[in-house]
Amino acid sequence: MIKGLAITPPVIGRISIGKVVEKNGKRLPEKDDCFTVTTQVQNKDGWLLHPLHAKLVEGSANGKIRAIPVKVLFNSSDLNLRAEYSLFDRTTGRPMCVGNGETAKRVTAEGISEVACASPDGCAFAKSGGCKPYGRLNVAIDGQEEELSSFVFRTTGFNSIRTLTARLQYFEAVSGGNTRYLPLQLKLRAKSTTQSHRAAVYYVDLCLRDGISLEDAVTQAIAEALKSEQAGVGIKALEQVARTGLSNGSFEDSEDDVPAIVEEFYSEAGEGAGKTGVVVPIPTKLTNKLAG
Image 1 (cartoon, rainbow, N blue to C red):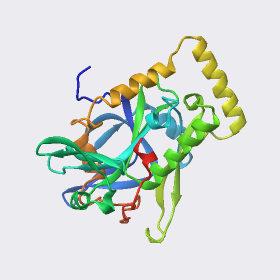
Image 2 (tube, rainbow, N blue to C red):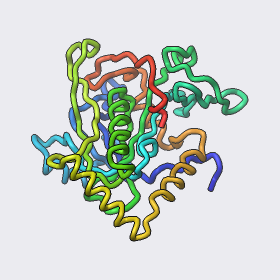
Image 3 (cartoon, one colour):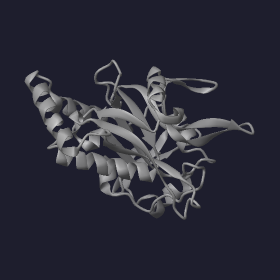
Image 4 (tube, rainbow, N blue to C red):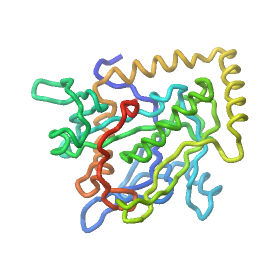
């Protein structure tokens, strides 16, 4: 294994609730009220749609995808969702500082150093660079052909990160550590606050699929986990390999991915923007559990 290179879950596509559009000669992030499922290829018009997008649209109301049937890759919540405070250099696109509210890895003149992390509002370095909570969720969409591959949902939205973190931990607890086998769905939800001037702010939730009770879902998950174990599928070994791979690098995102991430989530115009373009203050603190 190449040292210094984070080995992340294999990705075959993206899930987003926004896009980058060109306005007055500038490329700016624009939020949407539905999901978009794309490939990892983009042209001058944006990311190319994945074949699964059309299938999901067919079964949706008004041609808008508001729910996606998924399963997670792992039983462990902190492997399925990795979230932390992140600050990127907007010139080079490289990560400069990543922390969990207690400690952070920061690029300095002497290399990468471990420093105290006081959250964005308590850190002078963060205030000068636009530090945000940043999360990545990997899921398998029903209908995809490849095993152990995933679609990644990236977000800097506090509502999405907080909700997904809670859901994953709850499902892991109630299923006896069998989250991987639960029939789940990503669902788009909306809320409004005084900070959003009563406009809708969209965020992503993870819940059981419609029509399935918690008892039935857990019973099904336990049965599938037993069947998988009897077939010799080593999920615990898979999770150990995943942890080793993720910890192999200082920063998770590759240099190929970061420019698009910075453009979509960390641009000057889009900094702190909510789903309707309303500026929303960055939360004062994330719990350590968001660090993943």
